[in-house]
Each structure stands twice: as structure tokens, then as C-alpha cells.
Amino acid sequence: MLLSELKRNSISSIANDMSEKLIKFPLFMFFCTDIEKRQGFIKDYFLYHLPKWLKQDVVFATENFDTIAILSNPLEYEYKYKGVNAHYMKKYRFSSTVFMHRENMEQICDILLPYSKPSMVLTIYSSPEVGFDRIEGLIDEIVEYANKENMTLVFDTFSRRYLPGMEYKGFVTAYRKQFLNTQFVESVLIYNM
Image (cartoon, rainbow, N blue to C red; front, side, top):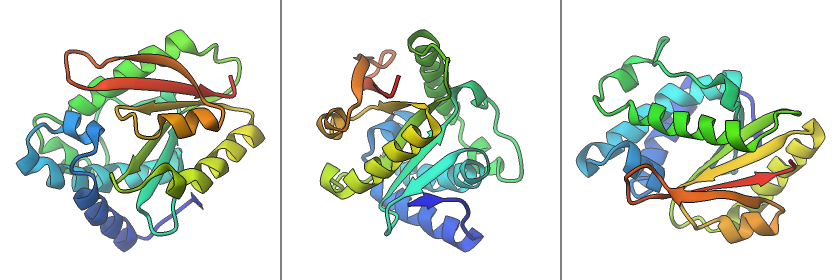
């Protein structure tokens, strides 16, 4: 379902829930290598980003919020924590890893995309037990939205879990490489180019 707004207590509840579910999510393993601090980091990440995403990006979620998908414009990435909730991220000395990932994604988009039509980066946050069959309806909704808006989707992931399902839905692998000098392999799939 497409989200346009959530109440503050709902955002806090989602942040708490996601912080427990995403401990082993590869992107957060990169953002926060210290497993002792990771749950708090994930909670603060969502407390900071979710209100911003609701204002300036496109947010989709499953009914029970076990999966959240964000469509963000790579040309509008921010590289500084600012605003009312900035303190959530500024307290972590390693929070700049988020910007490293964004910068890398922006460079990939600059190379791959002609920008002849709008392009959005799709990031899916889901716990390990959520298989593609549980998010297939959500992906269908996102694809329908992209077709209606005549936009290109760029699915970015550090996990191979959803790659076969995304390819079945019409996404094409455009980039796959080890991310910087880490253990993670970044895959970028494109839809509707």
C-alpha cells in the first residue's frame, strides 16, 4: 500500500519493530558493523528517515509493515543530517556510511540512466523471513505506479534474496559488484528504462 502519512506514534512503533527485524539486513550490517549498537542505529535511522521519506519520497509498505519500500530520487540525495530529528543520526560516529552508500548509488545512476524520464531508486527493507511471495503484491503495486508515472525504477540491494523474483517482474540486472572493500555484493536492477 502507498503511504502518504503516519502519526508520530506509528513512526516510533515501526522504528522499534524494524530495529528488531533488520539486525541481519545486509545494508544495516554495512551501515553499522557493531552488532551491539545495530538495533539502536536501525531504530534511529527510521526515526530520522521515515518522516523525511513521507514528505519528499514515495513510501510503500505491506499491511503489517514487515516490509517498507522507498522510492527516492537519486538527484536529490542529501549528504548532511539536518532538521528536527538530525540528532538521531548525528550521535553515531559511523553514520556517514549512509552517505558513502548514497554517493555510490548516485554514481551508478549517473552512469546507467539517461535521465530522459524520471528515475527513482527502490530500496526494500524487510526481515529475513519475508520471502518474495509475501512482497509480490507490493512489487506489483510499485511497478504499476512506475508505469503510470512513466518512470524508471532502480532496485538497489546488498542481498540476492529477491533477485529472481524481481527479474521475473521485468527488472534487468545492470550492475553487480563487490561494494567498496566490503564483504557485500551490490546488485542494481533496472525496470522500465
